[in-house]
Image 1: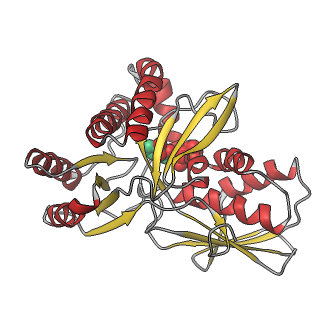
Image 2 (image 1 turned 90 degrees about the vertical axis):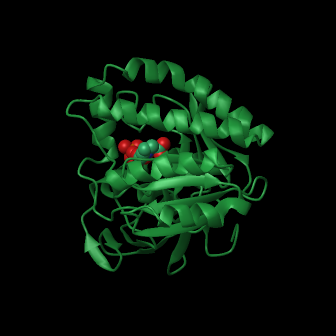
Length: 320
Ligand code: 2P0
């Protein structure tokens, strides 16, 4: 292999949420999901052959059980030498900005290229999903879907980034790491929420509705289904035992603000993940107004604006 290989990937934000796995290994989702991949946030991962496995996160050597488990699984199928994995993101990790999604998408893309594994995009998304469920969707760009066909979980690019150029405005309300990670939180919801069964039954219909809205570029329809899916997921979290409350006061204020400006004619809707950050999806002509509205909410520390971006690639150029 070359001395080192670098890959980049972007986090994705789900508009129809994934929250819950089928029991067993491999992060098999209980439901399909649909997302947008963000251009403005990037994870960059460089790998090189080393004497022993080593993971370096933002310049610091760390122990990472998820990456260790991921490499163990990969080595059951491929001859992989010890690797140094040097990774970093230009955005905060572990607080609801999907760093594990871009992390595992970049990692499998770099390993595939470095060791000439010859994986297809589907196979990379399958491996990325084993690392972290949402990572399967960061293999593709623009609007992505993760769904099951003939027993296989497939990541599909529904629309490329430029085909419907929406913006995602992110209101950062805290940089504190979440106290309950997504894997544990999902399992807690599966085991204890009285609403889990209806969530699993209803989400395929929500996914179909969102998919049709994306195909038709119907902003109003996408707004309705995305907010509904987000709030249903948080209802699931809140109704778990002990309840999972990922929001802070600024999160709630921001949701009210977004609905207020929508009532005033701004094309915008919200979504929130397993953390307190608020993501407002809007048309490009409204991005400045949405940023200003979010920046004005007490407790919003920073506002980022992103276009939709590409899937994971090796090197810095598309498809390099
Ligand atoms: C999603 N989230 O669809 C949902 C919405 C957070 C809220 O997927 O256990 O890090 O590694 O599969 O992918 C975050 O969970 O969890 C997530 P695992 P992951 O984006």
